[in-house]
Length: 604
Image (cartoon, rainbow, N blue to C red; front, side):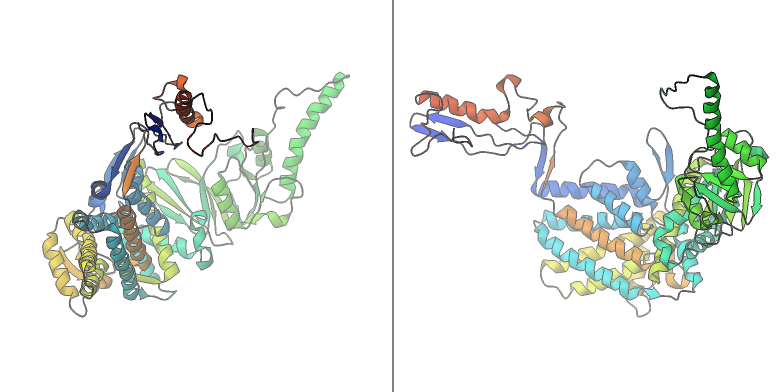
């Protein structure tokens, strides 16, 4: 009989009595009832088919003519053609297919763009290699040659990349436009591309890794998308919750001094069951006066330090609000931590956790502070900040779904421009690089003897999925266009020819300004190749059902066993007692010739 526990693998040793003497069956590692196992070629082909199904789910979203997906998770609706977003929302359950979700997330975090391409590449590589698996070619042989092909592809991309100088903003604008061209805001790339480039360039090379901390994106439903704007070298955040007296405050300052706090400026009652015993009723009033004096001392310290604006992560109560309003100050409490840190970095201020010892050196400043009405919301805007690092992009739109997709599009464009700014190397888009690398690998395959020639050729054919899918999504004849691309790339000056989405033909995409960071293609090829190797290296899939007994994992007891029989570890002892009772008594030492009963640790 076989047993399995997902948390406890145990050795079940059963003894067997026979007329000729004593025998023992060897121990076996067993699986729990209901566990789904599959091995060998069928499960490998099943994993490849699952990955192809995942690739098919995002296939139609690729390129400028890609379609959008509407995903409803029971609570909210998401409309997007971003590969990483769709992969996250699909909640894929197949264990092998989740590998494609991981490489999509990796591509999104590393480059920001190409999340659909990397999934399609991995799926197509596995599709082309499936015939070799069915023909009983060993997976290790396949993996060895596709790893070699992947390295050659990355090396070829590096050779094809073009470097540019630090002051060439045109290439950065072209890369941002290319990233936005396949998004929902493609028709407004002339508005957003300059915003993205300006925001990234304001960071400088030394702060590019802090992009998420320095560049904020705020969403305001309503209005036209063309009403979106950039707060350059500044910070903007939505007006926080306010108390009575807020409207009496000064809402505009030139060159203000800004105090940043992580302190609560509010009169609070005693917590829990505090008890104060007094002998004279007049003492009670002194206790009340002391509580008020504490808050007034805090407020006086804020005013006396010379600040014009007081921001705090914690609440600023109605008393403090009116106090600051009477003295011509502006205050805001419950400011989000990310916004408060962004203000600190932009203005040069330091966040204080205590009111004691405030001095001018910890105060920040900016050229202009203003509370401005944006649509139905009011925003606190800090402009012309001295550090010149932070920027805020304020997005407008008619629906929440549109604004959410616009935010994802801007994020992708920011990451692409960041990569271009870091590596200073770009390649042509539109499927040109994939066709050129495919041609290079086909020629290299002719130098290989044996099965490797066919495997590398299959890898080369898989790269053509990108230009083919671009044509299919645009409604063009992919067979004719791919034939024209192969012919053009066989010529001396055809290495940058790709798909012309506008005319339904081919064109020099580098001349046309369809540029992408070289890291995009390098990471896509490397990740897709590694994902294919991971899938091919799996020789057995074990899916263990969840235990129906919450205490099974802790106790080691199987749900299907009779609890009166004890723990599974007692089975060996029961079996030995049964055999030894027939040999002259329970555990009498008649274990076998030359074998005596094992003593305990203490020798007893």
